[in-house]
Image (tube, rainbow, N blue to C red; front, side, top):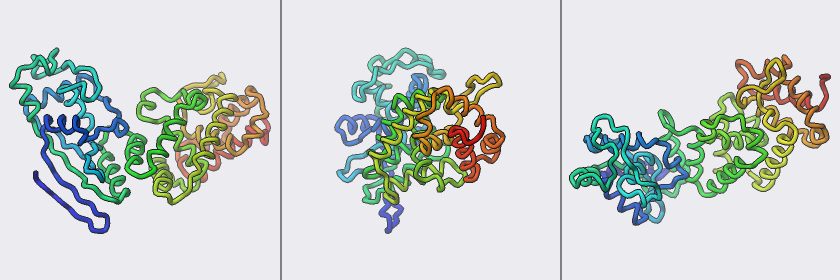
Length: 360
């Protein structure tokens, strides 16, 4: 074991660099000494071809990028970066150990003889080569400071990462005591039927990267931290979630869930999937969900819930179309829209039109 231990006495950061063989990783996983949590990253974003080419690279002796683990208070290691690489190899070595189907190699370009092979069908020499291949693991040793683990995970997965901003929030929130409870609320609400229908214009590729969960977080930020917006959506949402996780602000779980459910029940009843999209010259909804429209409509429905509740769906939709076509709204959603004044402006425009304060 080689050990590099940059120290920060105030925060108690200590890391170790260790070379594990894939066979050792498999044994540690079987013995529950290394935990591979699917919630940190989607377990198999990689295709079968990508997994197969990783096995091919190992057989060819190509270097494999390192992985990162965090040591818990009980000494168990949790994999927080490199899950795709690790789980792909473990699936090939022992698919049952991670509850996945057997990996049959395909798409290998350099060693075509590997195509169609499984671990049980390759010869002993290749089996041992794969199991004995080392991979460098950086271990973040146990620390009582949740903020350290949270920040390290964010930094490991920011910049050139395959993870979206919301996937990083999903993972990093679990580094903090109570963070799982908050993120599970977000995940639960993202499956709410009214919300799912109202936001169904989100492309499936964006949902796969948790864009629907980000909209739930954005809803809470609009309700509770609108004036914290400074023009960068990612920083705004990160900052608001961190304020909750580190208890810098309060968050009433029950009240916020009830408000969310009631709001989207109202939105879905009045507008269905037409709430957050543009309309063409024929008055037909067109295109995907527009985040600026989401902000304006959600905020208006929260602020004027009782008044909008009394209107017919036909009237709400008619007023919304006129609001979206107004010069005031267009001026608040075009270039330079990510400012506090423009955010307040588009919310005010939609609110005025939906409440009948502007002739339509």
